[in-house]
Length: 537
Image (cartoon, rainbow, N blue to C red; front, side, top):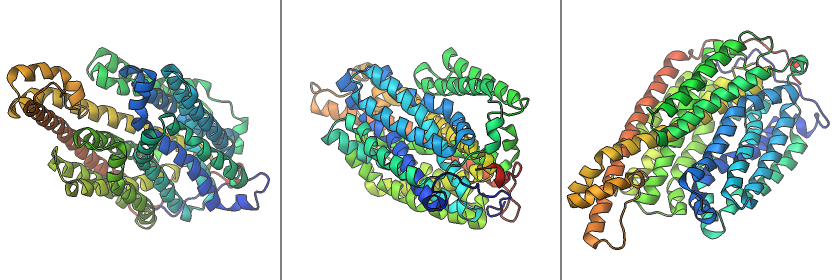
């Protein structure tokens, strides 16, 4: 499959200054990178702040979960809508609204003063993030010529990966030395800079023909309800149980609604999500592999941070520094993956990236509770390289294979698959770890020398052990404390080994899907129909 010949012209731009600063696609890339950096950083710094939020606002565990879940649900339910609105009313306009709203919601979270306020404003933040994220790629699609679009996506992916990976370091420093509120206030200066720079350099870009189309309100409702139900079932699966009636009902009901949405979209003149896009195999495969990519990345980062902080005893900053090889490798791999995709096609880079991620997962099978750092950094490098390559290749496959007029929709589709994949990765892998800990904790404690009566009582602490926390107390004799810590950490590592084994197998499945589902380099890139430049301004 070719990545260099797209029978659609880049969109023309309009508005004041279109011939000056706004004629430069690289300035457009810098502008959208600022907004993307803000959202990516926010997504990972919050996990570091959770403990302090709970202490300061007296939040319960379910309330703390909703700090993350409210943002995730709002984002997942509205990403495609945000892209569609950008195509219709202007990608620059929606991007700027997203930047302003996301920044204001971030400040409001720090000022809320209650856990209910934090949860509510996190949902608002997610909704504005859905206006911002899909239109970053759509703006790049509109201004970059096909031969340079792959490299632009590579840099876009690098910014996304680096901002996410820097979150634990930045968040740890702020929480330790300032306050948890400062984690959210950080978005204020970034947002102001992004807004001012974007006002100067971003061109307007939209699908002019969409202005006269009837808006697909039923499609919006069906898609939002379906995604909300599926993501809600996924994030609650760990606590409710994956076979519980609530989990199966939410996920099953959501799937039924999404199937109904797909059926409805084929029968309306102006659909929210044109199903014709999925006739392109590269776009379809790219969507699935994007979800797998973030399943692996966010799922593995979640338990790696638990391992480094709770098992190894590192502070958040120390743990973040030790994951720097992942950040650096991802930063290098994103433009490298774009260049390889441009030359050889995603049929090489996408499977290669997934194989690297599988290698990282399988290497973690050798980790123990006291592994040296020499055993830790090689999987970080492999994971970063794999994620960066897949991000570049899959983003190009999704957005680069969509007509320019549908750039916002394609960006929303890519961002939705990313969010759903990340939610699945975190929830499924944590559930696997919890299940394995529950099955092996008693035996691991006994093997470590904990008396049977004590081990039986500690079995109730399996939820804490599944997070890497050993249920020790100051009243325990030193020898017993050491035995409980050893047995608990062994049980946790049993869970980690199960999680990385499943992750490695899924990554190999993604590699096989990409290798078999994508066309070779020499084939012409498929499109879902050319979009004349005259209708895209």
